[in-house]
Length: 346
Image (cartoon, rainbow, N blue to C red; front, side, top):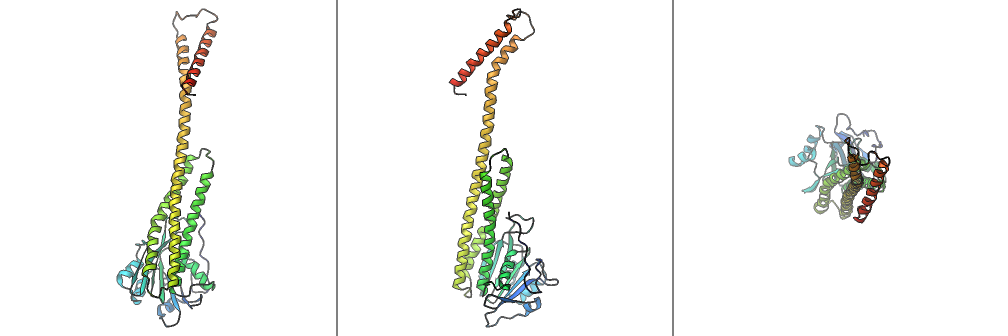
């Protein structure tokens, strides 16, 4: 897997780019989108007191959901208790639903933090009423920082709440593709490696890739269903162009799921090939040892019989007896080889 991407510092002084919330608050960052692809920075107190207006401005607040100040503010927003519990809980199976004029969703992305495995997915909860978007996470996520950088650098950032949600989902899905591409490249390298006796090591590496594929598919399948729910049931402020963007993300995620299936099947085929090759080599070695044993068994019997330490062995007083025995053994060897060739054992 590729190296985790460090969180990049962003403009302003209120954010903490280390990935931890601002001391004394649950706030990771807050922005008010100006409707033209940029935004201004807010403190925690400013974010709490911000009120929707008729202007195109949209508030985006990104919070650490384990902080105790989160739940009281969610109460102030008028979010029902079951929804609040979902937003701050560790039940992170991807899902999305409409609640009046608000959209509630739980999404998952791949964990690129140091020491994490690809299937260790990270969750992000979101709540949006068209004017305010609240996103929550427990562990550091790179996706919100990536979208934040677009806003702060005025790089064609999102202009409204629907566009902001689609940017977040698209960035999250694009990061999934990185892991899938890495696994496919690793499989290609293993497939073209010469078998130099490292069959066990190759099998271990393929087994890890196979487990990663299963883990990713287990989490990405519900993610696909959640995005379809957003596209189907989002409130009216989620405009048609936003639905088209979500549809593109759904199609891309579906292709990634198909790629995972192909990678998993390729891993199974490679494991079968390696095992079959190892078994064939083992059987060939066993076969050769059997042939050698079959050749020397009668010769060993004859030499053993003539070498017993008793009297009366024929030719023991004859000086040519040794060469007679050698000739006899040679004749038996030739007859054996002819018989093995006739029976197609050689």
